[in-house]
Amino acid sequence: MGWGNGFPLFNFYGVSPYYLGSILSYLVGFINASKILFFISLTFGSFGIYLLVKSLWGKLAGLTSAVLYLFAPYKALDVYVRGALAESLALAIIPFVFYFSYKLVVTTKTKKYSTLFTLSLFAFLITHNIMVILFLPFLLAWLIYWLVVAKWENTKLVILSSLLGFGLASFFLFPAFFEKNLVQTESLLRFELDFRANYLKVSQLFIDRVWGYGTSIPGPEGGMNFQVGWPHWWLVIVSVLLLFVLKIKKSSKVLVAGVIAAFIFSVFMTHNKSTPVWIHVSLLKYFQFPWRFLSLSILTASLLGGFAVSALKEKWQIYAASAIIVLSVILNWNYFRPKIFYSINDSEKLSGELWDQQKRGAVLDYLPKTALEPREAAPESPIVRSGRAEVINFINRSNRWGFNITVQNRVEIEVPVYYFPNWEVKVDGREYPFSYNNLLGRISLILEPGNYEVEGSFKDTPIRKIANLITVLSAIGLVFYINERKK
Image (cartoon, rainbow, N blue to C red; front, side, top):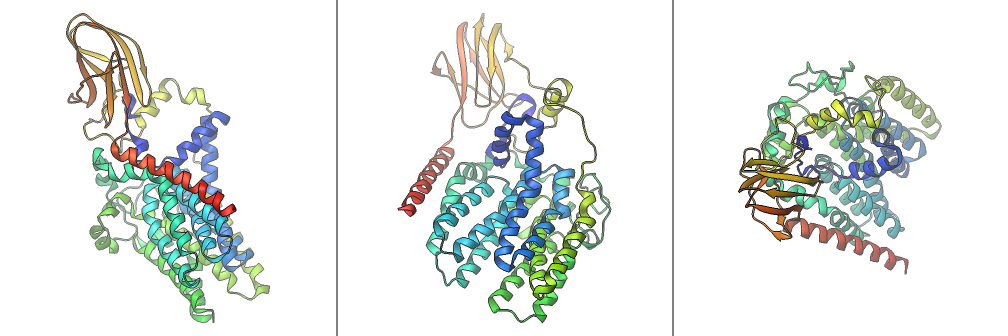
């Protein structure tokens, strides 16, 4: 990262895709691991939607919602156009979070579902920051609704499971949110990423069917398609009509009305009429693209599709479900394909010019405050800025580096590593003063004549130490909870 200088991306950017990918890469290689992750991100969420809607409205409704979610155009956009793996994986996990939280409240199998809710919430929290901010308010409303319906039974378990989920994720959440002042978040807010430059027209949401592999640019003339999807939004309208026509329990009516309201809100937030909300809620500026609210649109539309099927008489449900499923596949199948197929293997991708392209093209969203954006690749060895010295045995890893040096006269050595709290430098085993006030913000130190062994190691800040401790204690607590429930 940082064109060889390194920077703390994984302190701030969702880590779960990379944990999974690193494991898979040992088994099937890097490219195949990426393909598997993208496949999981496309398909896994539909199983969660099926389980949820099946529990609410029956098997046919669940199957309908699952296919709607599977073939939502925004998911194709995330994978085949944007390559947004973390966001796509978050969309695969969130249905399970809603499902397990629902089951925790309404069933008696509290041990099973409290554990599953904790783990699914944990996985979601460390996958994509923006999706977390987007979905958490709706998850809270969802939990409150079901707790009210269940007359506040299992409230303590819901709170405990939620705290354990956040506790497990604290190793990531604390640095990501409390140390963001240490990095250059300004790059996240430059003009083309400003929310004002990325609103959608109504026609883009509901009418436009032209698919492209271009980029998102200000205005409706960009090469990306941002539709809610056919027949997805049709079924929202059907659900609104059914809500007024059908005689259903008040609690069910409130649930469906809430889902419809969430859909309307998500669509509203993609349009420039929502500007006052974006301005007054300062956290929203980090969303960058208002069309990210389509994540909520496709989830709620899929849920409403299942409701629409369940609202019919039983003998008609099979026909309605079949028709919706066939339409979902036929109308959206063509979006789920790559623009180009490449014939390439890991060794080709990660060597020579292609490897240099990877390093140059890596995102620079979280450079340290003290660093300057690199204009060329980092050197493969420390730089002797003044004086005379010979550097040998340079080792550079993600959280440590080291070298041996023979100094003829007083020298300044610049290590090709960006400084970020808390790098620690030792010379011959003793802590040694250094600076990072050079042009690029790299670690540098001054040495007098002699032979030295120089080492650098990346240490945790107090916030990271506290966060890691909370994660460890939460993991221990979860194990004790599971064992205690067994007894």
